[in-house]
Length: 122
Image 1 (tube, one colour):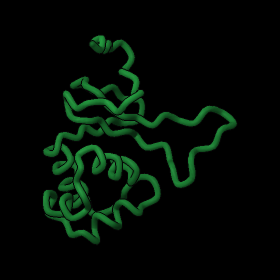
Image 2 (tube, helix red, strand yellow):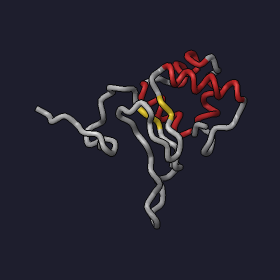
Image 3 (cartoon, helix red, strand yellow):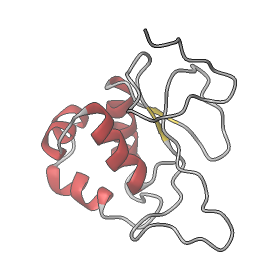
Image 4 (cartoon, rainbow, N blue to C red):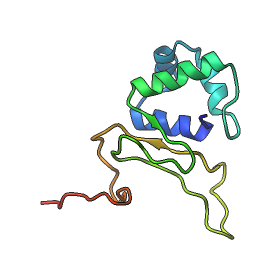
């Protein structure tokens, strides 16, 4: 459903700290901390996971499943699998990805989704 890396990335994209996400989702700060400290997919109470996903959705985050395409388009971030023979950075897994809200600016040097174009700078 959602990985710890996706959760951390989603918070970073929205600028929410753990306390802010806890308030938005109706969960406790220790619950958010436990979720972010998980290894891989977050496991836990289904109700808590649903509250978390709904809060992220309300904040403009679109969770993208492994191999899925973002139905609403827009700019996004996805961690792809490491090339054969290469190892992932320390502490990194291959999360499903998180997408930025529609119209959010891309970081300098970011690429656009396949088939998308960027207006010329000028």
